[in-house]
Image (tube, rainbow, N blue to C red; front, side, top):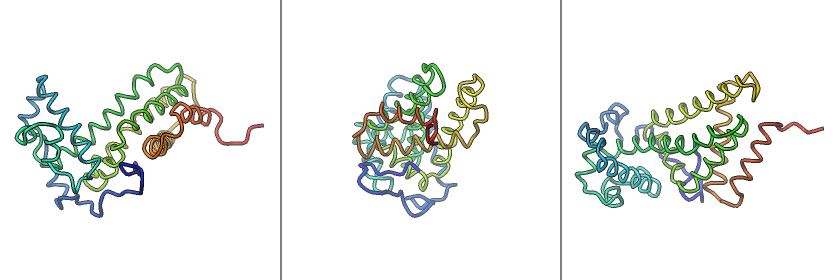
Length: 233
């Protein structure tokens, strides 16, 4: 789990039922897909801006109030759009929440990917990815509460978020191994370990406090990836 509340002041959990806040089953939630008309309008500049405004507003609404207390009207007020505009793109609160989880995962990917690609080697790439992730989290602290709550509101999106992130890490680790930059036996376990480390470092140094510069955190981890935790001679 992402493991943290919006403001970092206490342990937070998204609910006590995997049926979600609405009480509907996974089958019912899956029917709440974005409307086809919305998909057509997303192809226009105005449509893209409206969708972006709704998703950004949803991030704030869910981040501050949680899924149970958040409302469609609250999202539209924050976005500055009419209620009808919301329903052009989404059928329900469940649908926009599900889209938001995917969107935030994509935002993280898009933020860290250029830094990773620009790095000279794999250790430098892992350092750059962590650095960019912490910087992103400091500006989007709500991501931890939203992703955490997805475990209960929409388990499928929750699982997909972590599975796809770990898969991207595994691909780049194996590419680094093929280049001879890191050990040759890297596996899925290593990818999940790197992801877990990054998630909790983001929580500690991105959400809870900013008492240590992201560069300093990334330097410590890069050194640990190179030298491990064994005592040095």
